[in-house]
Image (cartoon, rainbow, N blue to C red; front, top):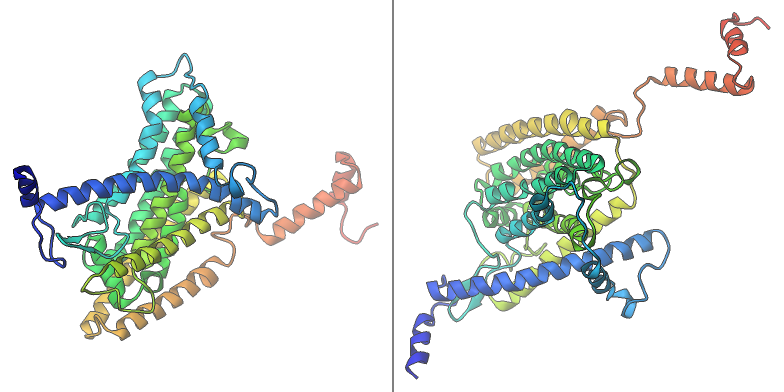
Length: 441
């Protein structure tokens, strides 16, 4: 009886709309960690099935359908297969680094989720429970710092394998991630300019008040999405793996569950990047077309509805990842680097200057935190999007299929090719045709 009273004294009933005391806070944190860890791993496993189902739908075939009802147990069968397969290690590989590289590739994606708020606060008899594992005031900086660590796992896997193809894959991965990590960071600075804070909860509140950043900062959203594809090594940015060139890239020498950790890390990164895009540009857990969920008093219904809204946005983003993979071809490596350094980085820097100057002008006009402010930003982004897509590009700068040669040069080469085919590739006869004056039979 005394023991129960002592335990009860650690969890006194408080204000349901107030902060948690120390004891309930620790218990809530432990519960959130356990629930998140299980839910995250299950979601990653189901993403492998979702990718196969969606790709089958795109290619007009059935996909997995033999293991369990509608093929839902296929991830379980794949997991059992990987666990029972022998995990080999090349004789010349660096033992410790070779073993820990898969874990280093997977862990940063999962840890980044710790600061992402995925629903409105949950009221309990002991106080409000934040629907994020750690509601850090510097959550945005934590996100950038942890997400950039994932490249170490891929680089170590390529180097520790002592394999030429794996090393090339690791080098490609490091160069690609460094290139697009800068563009990703620059694309999020306009978000901070509007929010005036580095807390992810504050960024969601700013979007609830002014509108989603996908409308106010459209160029930043496009840059973030492209950089997100490159950071996760997904098509059309899967040069580190490139099966037609590098066998399997950085995980060429891996087998069993160690090999499976790399695809799982890729899907984990997909989920994390989608959650970040949802939080920074799609309003996070904000329910569109209503202000009911923006302020207290907080209720369990609000928590459930906002979580459903966040999950729906996350699902759309993940579907886009799979859709793009089975639609676009792979870039050449020079196109990959040129897009990151010659297009995205200058565009991100110019966009930061434009948004900063435009925001200062609107604040000087007294339009901050008004509908006119949001409407002006939206109109600015429409104009900038038109300029970028129609005036600057015209299908020549960004398009990976655009030729470097001028159209007249391409036509001349086609004519020479046609002449070569006509005369059976005879160099002497072709030379005579090339040197014959026009109009002479």
